[in-house]
Length: 334
Image (cartoon, rainbow, N blue to C red; front, side, top):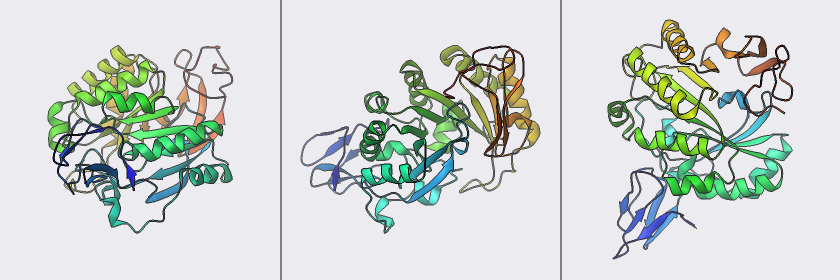
């Protein structure tokens, strides 16, 4: 068993987890809301350490990260548990589960790094569920990966407290944050969390110069209003700048939200236009093959990276510059 980081002992074997904004107070044998941390005899234990329930070699574009070594492979792992309980979760069978439910084989951090090397992966991605809940495992792998010249990537909901986030920032190279919506009401009703801590996470990642991309899943009737999308894009521009890539993703009925239609293409196109109008330079539409999956120069509109789904068919970016007008293209490409 691995003792968890970021908690404090209170009294009578009661502990308080300080990893995420839930600040769970746990009596003996109590589980955190993430289901991945448990009070065992007055110590907080990480139940997910060394127990990946999903491991695959993925294209980095699948995260999605479009400005971080495009066309490379990422060794991707995920353990059971999540800090949020989104009603529309795509991986609820593992994200909303207790790690003890899965008869997984224990895999040492060094084995993950070895597998990444064996599969010629440029990076290791902590993804599929919420990597924050497996922070002890992530840190141990990431430290070894860094020494081996392998990059570290997180795909996260951003629901984490400042102190553990700043520890992660020492080892993480790139992050995609799922910004679920842009109202406190949406987060409370559909994710059982709060918006404000996620916005704080985004600011810290930007301040720490971690390569950052954002995904916004557009769900018809829940978070697709023009007003909220416009407000979100203005916030991103004002707080994170023009150059953070923004991915609008198509919703498909999932988990407990089965009564909504698939996101209409028109809604995605509308969101794209709002983002561009607000001055965001790199805007993409995901979960559907379309012209907005390619990277264009924000200055001269030249086609720089052409994509077909998760495959790169053309890459004209060299030394982070447009091959036509020489404008600087933000990202990590070389």
